[in-house]
Image 1 (tube, rainbow, N blue to C red):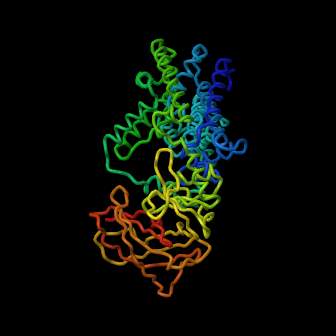
Image 2 (image 1 turned 180 degrees about the vertical axis):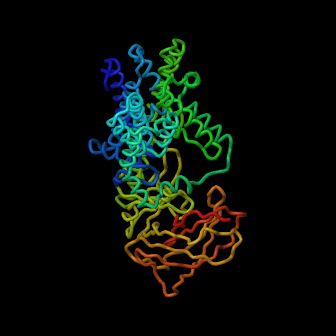
Image 3 (image 1 turned 90 degrees about the horizontal axis):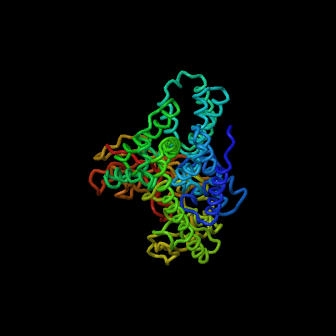
Length: 555
């Protein structure tokens, strides 16, 4: 930073860093953090749901500390870095007179507070958004090749954090279209694309699985005003807690005084409008709009320094907000203090309960990319999420976790087993049953492809099914059963009907290793009325049908 940071600023920043470190150490992981910890066990340039930044953070932090603090160390560092960057971006002459007001404003924002220690993709997204605006302010003032290089690297950092980062770049560009005539802006874009090239390569090598899932494969529901649009409006309040009236009042009354402020306003209004429109199609999660916290800290702080009444109210109500948030943060560690059961409560307990029953035996969880990594984190034993046709693909669908549990005894856990004893009870009272399997063998990576995408609902002709075996061994067809799953228009499974595809070569008895086998099949008549999609699933050794084919639209 070009300016020397005031001593009071450093004291308050250090206090927040200390609080976050203590919180990070004593709070059990939440399920998403355990899932991203699973990412970090196999470093790569991409993962099923997100770009790799969150895994890199966990990997780096785990070099210095074990357990929860290792998972969250870099998040604690990035969160104070975000505050320092926001402070450095403000150039108002009165800012040193209102240091406590700055911290009250930022620390009272709900998710900006929580992501001070949780390790989620939004944590680096916030940091790189703050860094982006810090650099962008200098860039629009006097662009240089060095700033263009830096800006390009920051944009790559944004995109390595979360795909939503594209909104930051697009809306800032729309706020200043003169950039399309700037050679330095094009240099920044070139540097960003070059730095992001490894992730593009990863996407290509994995058949763009992340993009396909987020854009095409994600299940949805019929529109509900209360759940979708009203839920989005509630999120707008939840994002800022009790200070929300003054935050939005400052936003509505602020007028751009140059390209930098115009970029802040375009990003804020653009993200809010984008997700408001999205709320008519699907439920908008609160963290999807968290990126507006960065421009709003800058806009609102500028506004409150110039208006004593607003400054007074945000400071007073913000202190109440902070008191409530600190109480809730204490409740994350001590469950009786929290108003509801939360996912950071009792995970070590159920893991140890299960571990005491199964010892070092690998555990296979049916349809739970949440429980599987949590068990591995706290037990140190291998686990795997066996995803079936009723669930969704995830990182366990594309990594090597399946290999760790193959051809050996495992303990199989499901919430709906009818022939198993109680395996464990979570602290929220939910019970899971389990049973031992003497020889576990699954083939969830078998992929099914169709040669045509034109499937009439009422057609009865034969279709060609191409089945690819990616494993190193041949697979006996007797171990496999095929089915067609019919989905409604929102890609929810409603019917599963077994089928018996006919090998085009009648002498085929196995799926050859790393080879494709062609079958002929007919779509069976569904029980549901007017299905919207169908997909092919394969059951191996009596397990539930898997997610072996993509959802195909019926015409």
